[in-house]
Image 1 (cartoon, rainbow, N blue to C red):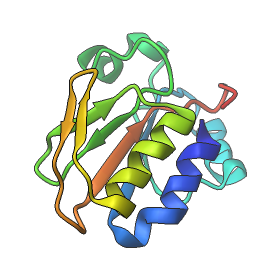
Image 2: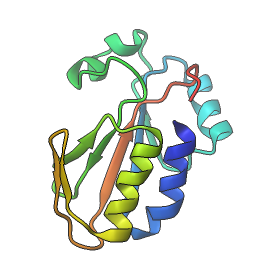
Image 3: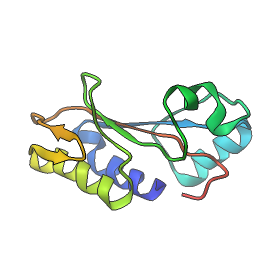
Length: 130
């Protein structure tokens, strides 16, 4: 999934897209190495706790697999969740290039004006193949 997130980040960061990745890793060196090796130039956070999906943050947000992705508007409204791969790229492309309203797609309804900030939060792990 990292390749798709990198793609949309590179395409739309200057238009207002930001990415914040939260890792479930428990080893700081492995986490930082993965960030560097994967070329993930956006912001990152990590609790550095053992337990993966059983850590407090994962439990709080219902993370049962990684990556878990949300698209969030500037007011904090979740526009989409669980999008991956080409579906994530298509969704973000539509938001930034076409400024259109997304119809009722699995409960996702969006009506955005130009230049809105969109955030994508993912939870990659250094030991997970993306």
